[in-house]
Amino acid sequence: MQQRWPSNLRIVRHGESSGNVAREAADAAGLGRIDIAERDVDVPLSARGEEQAQALGEWLARMPAEERPDVVLTSPYVRARRTAEIVREFGRLDVDVADFVIDERLREKEFGVLDRLTRRGIQEEFPDQAEFRRLLGKFYHRPPAGESWCDVILRLRSALDTVSLHHCGRRVMIVSHQVVVLCLRYLLENMTEEQILAIDREADVANCSVTEYAYNPDIGKIGGMELRRYNFVAPLRQAGAPVTADPDENVASR
Image (cartoon, rainbow, N blue to C red):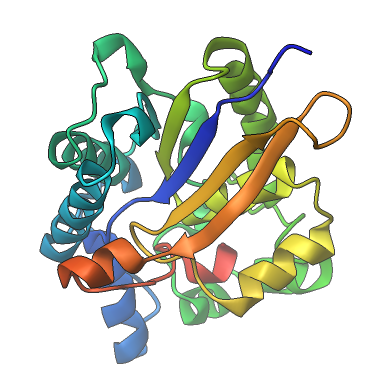
């Protein structure tokens, strides 16, 4: 039986970003709009986010070289790319240019017209969209010019096919965003809408947390990926780095 999956797959949410901080401030002040100057793709890590990424890298560096990732796939967004770069540096990952891949299919969920709005802002400026989301649920609701969770899942199916085709047997790390982490779980574990939304309700995916899978040849007829840990933040706590779980910039449409 030919193995079709990586031997190990670690999925990492990016470190805390300046957008996470701005969203938290807007919510605390009861504002409708989040004060972010950059495009969402250009939002950088905060100082805490850089510290979190370094802590994660140092945790990987303490592993034997043969257990560290040897392929890195990252969202093109600045906060994800920077997280991946810091982890590669401090984790002493033997990943060359060809195996450090920026993949646009791993990008953040697109919020469309609801971008930079808090829950209050959406209610004030787009009450019809707030009602559509209530009726459809976040899994299926697609804001104008934006994406639903299903849209994200569609592009991630293609990304996982690429992982299977090009990186089977390798040790892969994906650096991406909160919704992407959850949607990858949905795909890898063959979940239903109800199951993944129940996990989402339990807690936000922490910044620089690790969701890890290992290949198990006994899953199904051709083997599959087995969850080993989810939302794992021990590397941050061990290094004394702050643990943050700020929702993505637009929590209401996430």
